[in-house]
Length: 271
Image (cartoon, rainbow, N blue to C red; front, top):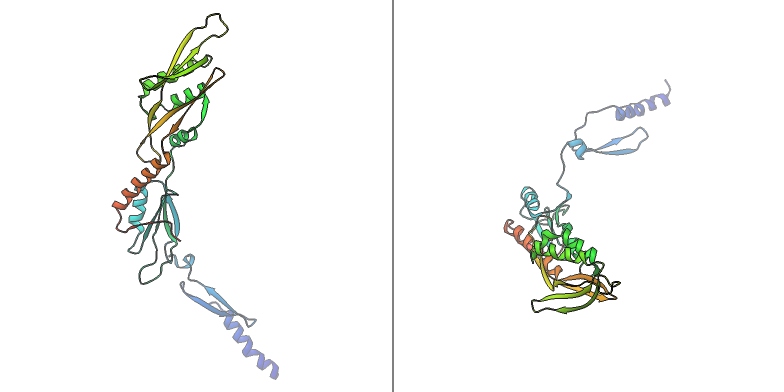
C-alpha cells in the first residue's frame, strides 16, 4: 500500500460515516456533512413531522352574531381584541393579539361580515327611481310581505288598480284631504266619450325589511314619487334614511355581541 492510499482511507471512512443512515427525532434541526464537504440543514420542526401546529392561525368569516360568539368562546384568550367598523359593517376579533407584557402574532382572526338580505337590496335598487306603471305594480305585488302601512291587502288592491290603468291616458293629479294623491284618467281617448276614472295612491307608506340575514326587520317610511306627462304616469318612491336604518341594525348586532364578551369593543379596524 502506498502512502497515498493510506492517506485516502481515513477520508473515505469519514465520508462513509457521514453518509451512513442515522435515526433522528422530529422537532429538531440537524446539520449534516455531505461527501462533497458541504453542510446541509434539515428542519424537522414543522407540523408534517411533529404532528402538531406551533400556534393557531387563519381567518374565519361568519355571518351572524351567534356564530361569532360561538367561535369567540372556543378560541379567545385574555389578550384577544375586538374591533367594530360601522362603515364596513364588520366586527373583527384578533384572537392572538398583543398582550400588555408580550407580543402576539395577530394571525388568528375572526370577522363577522353581515350579508344584506335580497329584499333590502331590492328596495334600495328602486329607491328614488321612476318606472312605468306595470313594473311598479309588479314590484309592490312581489314585496307584499314587507308592506305594513297601508297593510298588504290594501297595497295589493292599489297595485291591481295601477295595472288596470296601464293603457289609460292620465290627464291630471291632485292631492286629497285624506293624504292620497288622485290621478284622473280617460281609458279610451279614441272614443267620442272615453270612460273616465280616478286612481288614488297614498303619498306615504311604510315598509319593514331586515337589512341583514338573521337580523330583525326595521321600519322605513317611503314617499310616493310620480311624473305625469304626455298622458303617461311614472311611479316610484323615496325611502327615508335607509343608510341610518342599516347602521341602527348593525349597532343592535354589535350590542348583542358586546353583552357576551368580556373585552371592550374598539372602534376601527385592526392593523
